Length: 219
Image (cartoon, rainbow, N blue to C red):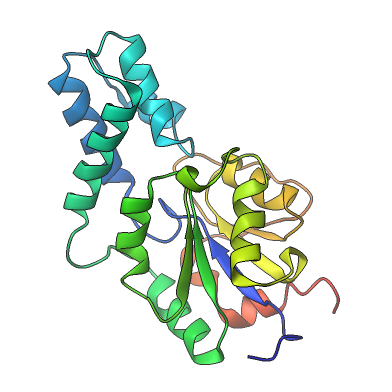
């Protein structure tokens, strides 16, 4: 890889950005909530979008679930990992983008507020390019703090300013922007308001290697 070529790496959010896993999370949250006889609604899905899994688990405990946040977090992770076993549900255009990055020698990472067990299922679907996984279990401060993106860049051995992040939520976009990298925002469950450093696209298929290279801040 030519180290001077932009981008040095591409850092992807997971749910709703790389993979269509939001439905699996919604089903898992309802299943686990029902197991503990507490409610879970579509409004709860939206309220916890982009947040850590323990955030959802904590809400269930606050509603009376007779378990610890840690236990419910593990249950949610097992449910989603089992649902994603087999073929990885990459979103349209993502598999071809990953192939482009692999051919060009541009490494990538998964940077997520989800769990390692789930993110690694996805990374295993493109091991030649998705070389690093950073989950909420790896950091002290999850998104929207910049720590997850800074850690991913450090693990890849690249300058954060020479990376591009791809996100679908305001929480994640704020994290990547705070880490000093341009953020491509793909459509998600909730709209993301334009901010300096955000590049909003209409569809995941708009994100190609050529498009990412056009964002080089030094050009």
